Image (cartoon, rainbow, N blue to C red):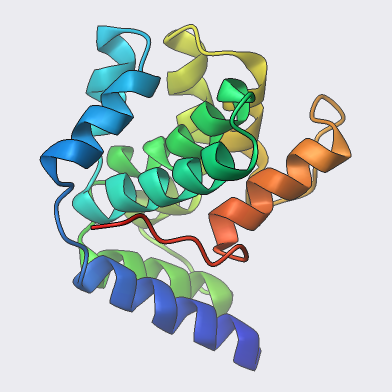
Length: 169
């Protein structure tokens, strides 16, 4: 496992451990980006850390590309597939480490690791736009041809926190 992978895993672990619930204002902001009860159920069923990460990613896109609600929504929903596994902090960490070591994982850990594919299916069933579905499916991989390179770069930058955006408390 590379030093970069270890740093990323440690950072995500801390994000999950110390995630705080969304404030009323943040919940209102998210609600403004939701288009249906099904989407609301998908977003709010996520763990607190995933809600916060989705908000941070979507807010970064909204700040830089305010006319691209499709990209804001893609950022907001990209991790919804993690709910399927139902893993807590230690389960998520174990899944990531075991996977990086090339070892066999449990079915729940496998679901966590396949969250992009699972999320894409859920988002497609909810009737979400193609870019929302495809970013969920591919956000840990290569850009699909259906997403423009500049859009992909913006989505990945927001997901990885490369823009350094943190919403105001």
